Amino acid sequence: MTRVLVVDDERPALEDLGRLLERTGGVEEVVLAEGAAEALRLLAGASFDVVFMDVRMPGIDGLELARTLERFAEPPALIFVSAYEGGAVSVFEHGLAPLDFLMKPVSRARVEQALERAQADGPGRRGRAGGQRATGSEDRLAVDQSGEIVPVEHQRGGATRLLDRSSVLFVRAEGDYVRIHADSGRFLMRGALSEIEERWAAHGFVRVHRSYVANLRRAVEIRPQLGGTVTIVMADGSEIPVARRHVAELRRRLRM
Image (cartoon, rainbow, N blue to C red; front, side, top):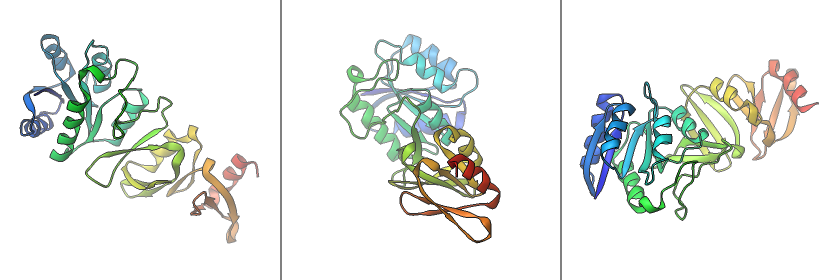
C-alpha cells in the first residue's frame, strides 16, 4: 500500500488530484499540502512513498522542494504536475530526476500509470541527489544533463514524450501552439514561436520566417527562389520558406 503526498498551491487542483488518487487501487493514504512549506512540515513528521507536486508555486517552488527531497536518505518517488510546457523544461534543465511528469488536466489513466511506476520502482532503487536514476525500465524518463531534452505531449494517453533537441528539424507556429517537426514525428506544444527562438538560439535554431524556426544544423541545402528569397531544405527533404528580410542574416550565418 502506498502513502501519497500531493502538493499544490491551488486548492481546486489539489483536491481534484487528491480525489483521483483516493480512487486508485493500492493507495493507503492521500495527504494534501497547500504549498511547499506545508509539505515540508508534513514530511518532517511522516514518511511518504510518492510525492505529486506542482512545479510553479509561490515561495518555495516544486524545483526547490524536489532538490530537498532528493537529499533524503530514502527519498520518495517524485512526480511533477504542471499546466505549462515550460514547467517540464524547467524540471529537466535543472537536472532533477522525477519518476514521471504529468500535464494538467491530469487524467485518471495517467495517475494510475505514474503510481504503477512508483510502486515498481521501490525506495531501494530510487535516484539520489544529483539527478541519478534507477535503470532497467525503458519507459522511465531519461534526463539529459546537458539540457538537450525537449518534453512534448504524446498523442496517446496524455503521456509526455521526450525528444532529443538535435532530432528536431524545424518548428512551425500554429495559433497558440507550435508544431515540432522531428525525426520521430510531429508534436504539438503550447507556447509561442518567439519563446522557442529565444530559448533554442544557442542550439543552432534560427528564426527564418514569421511562422518558422529552423535548426540550421539539420539543413542540407539552400535553394534560391524568385524575388530574392530562398528556401531551406532539411535533412528529411522538407522545405522551409525564408522571408526576404531574413535572407541576409541567414547567408551571414552560413557564410555564403
